Length: 185
Image 1 (tube, rainbow, N blue to C red):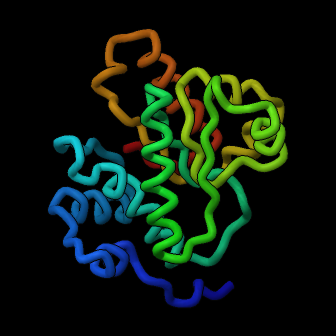
Image 2: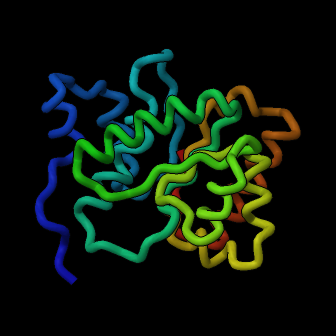
């Protein structure tokens, strides 16, 4: 298979918007592309979402297209945060021309959307720890999550030392079992 036709990188998308990546964003992208896991710590509004997602997007842009399926699982501890992440992710994906779908799966997801997701999960799945565990209860979950390249745990500090934090740790370990190359940020 041939690599995808050239598409703008995340850096080119930033430039098209008149932005310059922060050092922590560029470092995160490089570390992700080198196969690393890590922790991003920066003030609110500085672009942590783009830092965490950028490496996986650049990797996809420079790789042969693979099978459809989950590429990114984004754990958000609060449902309100999910909409903001969805908007930022969709903007980046559209800007670089990557045809990934972005979807939210929480306790508030309407039954019609849950039915669509039973047929095909989006490439970027924004969910809560509880909803991810419910998805892992489906018989075909290992196949559905085998394509995952990135797990992002947003607001990890809010989950540390809690029951939900333990859920995240268990989910991360399970995801790593079904998708051994999945990186965690």
